[in-house]
Length: 210
Image (cartoon, rainbow, N blue to C red; front, side, top):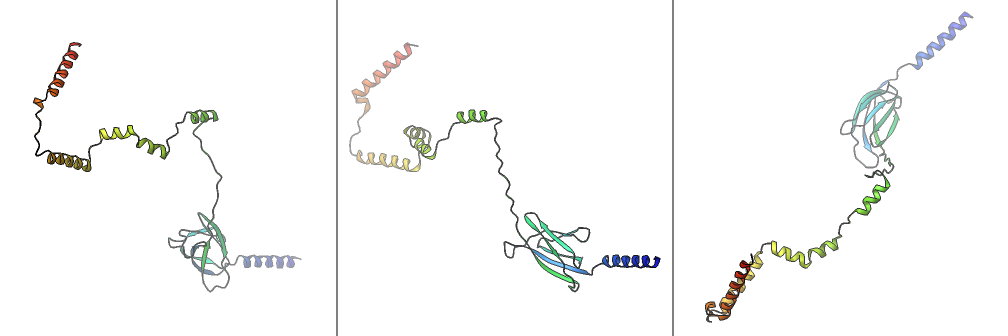
């Protein structure tokens, strides 16, 4: 009986050592790509060896990675915005194994969240009713071409080159037309003297009322 127990213990111990036997080492290399875009590299992908205490490696900015692993190790590739991918290194790969990893973009639609600057619905209604609606483009254009707006701009804006040239042309034309005629002297015009006297009289009366 003792011999039988010893044989059974020896068989169990041998099986345990056989299971714990380390798999052959392999140089695991590859490049990480985007599955939806041919030839597009996915850089800085996290690579976790799930079979070796979750040892973590990272691909470089060109998506290339290379590290030592074991045959039949489970390797997981993960990156922000992509679905994780897990592969198993096959056995008998002759000390090196190169693979092309394609990561599928993962889109997560978040629920819509509305933010309102009002504490209650009543405050929103009050502000909405008191809100001044801005003019549309047609109303703004109508105001800009109104007579009041044009007169205001005419009084404030300086003359441009076209207006100055037109005024000079008219003055030159008048001089050419009247160059052979006798220019009247305003001092000899009785109507002008009468207008001057009325202006002086009105000015005296205006000063007398102060």
